[in-house]
Amino acid sequence: MPYVNIESVLAANPQIIISGGNSKNDLLDSGFWRKWTGISAVKNQHLYAIPSDFLQRHSDRILEGTRLMCEYIDLVRSVKLRDTKKN
Image: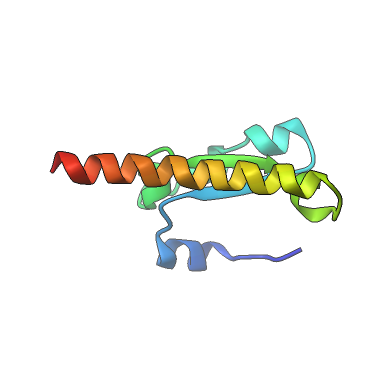
């Protein structure tokens, strides 16, 4: 499983964070990221989760995981576009 350290995430300042997990608690535990208030994704509450089985198992479920990921990215993109037009 790929691993990205916290320093890399802080340096990249992502607009969205999509995490995975194997249990309901893993998916709902966005409290870990919420303490990093300097990250754009945290400031704008763009924290999302996808069950790991939807992306790590090469079956039809990967299509659902990909659909969810695209949906989350499109949502953040549309919010950013809307905010840009306001200014």
